Image (cartoon, rainbow, N blue to C red; front, side, top):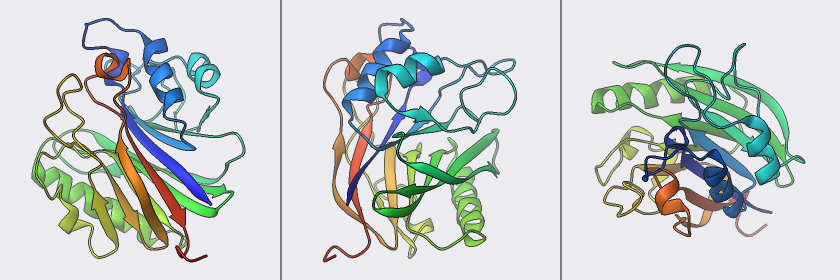
Length: 234
């Protein structure tokens, strides 16, 4: 009943060598061997936000499928974010959460039927300003309060250099974990990428992925987390 969750900020597939190589990022995602992956910065920011990562390339290289968060247009996701799942994982509901703050931000929410039972995953890319991050986490918690009760994970780029990572604004419903330093990828100094685990979801192990070409493919390293749905004694 173990599931692997992962999160990766693609930096629009622009590597630390200033080359844009989506196939390189797709190789990193495939190597994570995750069941569910939250991605950030999958699209360019200007105009209609065309995809920086071609959907066909991503799905072929990883064996995962892209959930339908994109509105009409060339984007791969929404506000630069999407969620990938294994083909056997069925989406129950998909939602977009508009987030407050100084910059346009949003979160993507997927309620899924997995081999371990129902699971909600929320992908985030929080703001650069602490006040905005606090407001955004409050908006996410408010959105969840109107949804069916189920184990929930919030993961992504929290954009927070502090040790707490705003975890106090998720307590007591969530426990925030930083699997390791992820930014900048060649020599990580900050644990910007994190996972928050809610009731009914147990963190077994977690870490950062540093194997080639992760240190050059993006400015962030990916994180992964192995979780268990239900009681650890089940």
